[in-house]
Image (cartoon, rainbow over all chains, first blue to last red; front, side, top):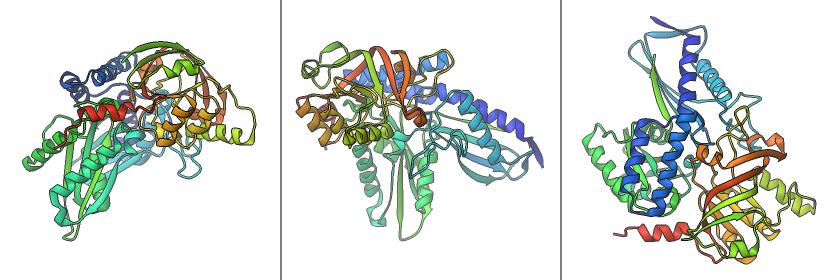
Length: 283
Length: 185
């Protein structure tokens, strides 16, 4: 059994979290640049220019891209032949999150659902992190990370369609969600769609779909075609950058599909703002 | 689409000439408040008590900035989604507020208040928090420090860039812009 020291895990995750807050990854940057080139509206183009200027400034001066530095969301694949010594993986990730958010001057955004008080003093600074674990073969730990903002999360929706509604029903649902969202989730956006599984599997898949690099094709050719069709449909809505009206509303649509119950067709839409701050490491 | 440079406090005359789509560079003092602070301001108005700042001609920025690095006035400071303030804004507008800065749609009550009492809703670019912070020269918490990022801050701004979304004539840039680019099958 391979061993990884707890402190090494903390150090690696912390560095990733701090870096991600101020450095927009290449895939997001390239997608926004492409939208800037293709946009027809002058107003939307000027917004996209501001977004690109902001990304360059944030990176050069090591400043958070956005004041909403998100909840820290992780997908962790733990190999069956590796163990962390000196503490638990969950504790290491939470500790790394807290240290990175504090030392990086990032915002603590976790609060109580009812009285809304910030949990930074009693639970920890921007804690708890949202961690989805999976067990996989091998002796590595793979960690995918995203700083997920609230504005785009607020417009995300899930439903369970009747199987007869099929692909057309999925298309209509996705279109309705993005149309209703309008300017609110900070377009241009990336749209994660989870199809199938059970209710919660669809939701989790729609989140995980956002971690894929924008602009990379879906490995399933049918889904890849469906993604392109959805993107074209959504861009017809005319919402544009920050909702000012334009041709470039959606940077990419990413779908994850799972087998489902014979009676159901769960669908979830998770929206990612243009500040798509994500990263991954393998230990 | 016109471009203006304006200094706060804003007058009825200032805001009446603005139209949806105009670009405005704001100078002077603006105040920050999110939902929790708005609730407290409205509670004070309802009780007839004094507010922590003068609403007359004021501009309120919906923002919860990141903590400042040492030696800097503020951290990243882009707009938050405005609909969460929809139930409070009309009351503040009725009592003299002239401008709001945020992102995203407002409800009919806010748009109606903008027409009736002469106020405008400005949009700033969401997710451009590092860039926008450059226009903020000073920041001081003047009320509710216990709210952390949601405390009320007094900001001194220079050439703070915003776009008029809802004007005093009932226009809405989001609706106008989308109508222009929507492709109907």
